[in-house]
Length: 206
Image (cartoon, rainbow, N blue to C red; front, side):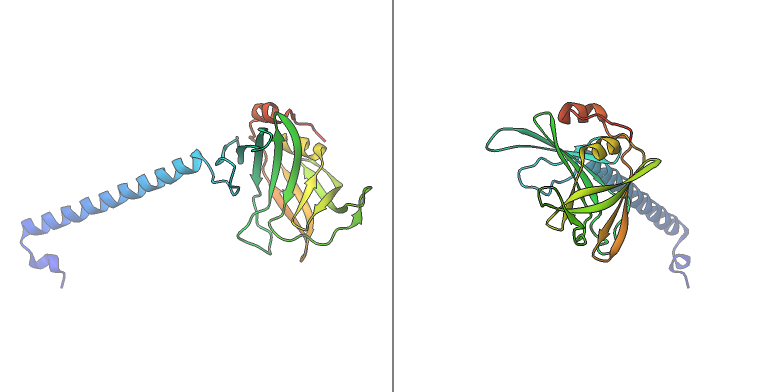
């Protein structure tokens, strides 16, 4: 038998009102918590590097991290974009691309698949290991030979970096230890004025 039925009418009304109030308070708590998490996400992203400031939004899905070289005093900027998908070896680490700049000039761009790469394909002019990848920038695609760095990431060419920052779609097909896979990125929305100021880099259609 429902316990409420045994209570006087006024007690039942009071208990029902108390439950409604508790439910409203709990719902408000959930809303406030969600808002706080959203605000924290917008404020920045923790940097994985000790001497780098936490990241701030750089437009679209990009995050910008800043640091200063302790020896030279060079002002560094790193723009990072995570992929929309995971590769099958590691569902906890998304592939990412990075633009690294120093004192207002572009230095390099890297692609990190978030998992171990397959073996390099051939040596470059100076004997450095290289891997062939296929790159899609919006409606065009082509094969690229990128420097293979310790089996963990690939050094992108500057032309691809310029195409990427002005694109809507940017995909990289790369060979991992378990075969070819595609990392899918959405680079649209990047603050191109900030990139031009920090890297002296402008977009270029392939």
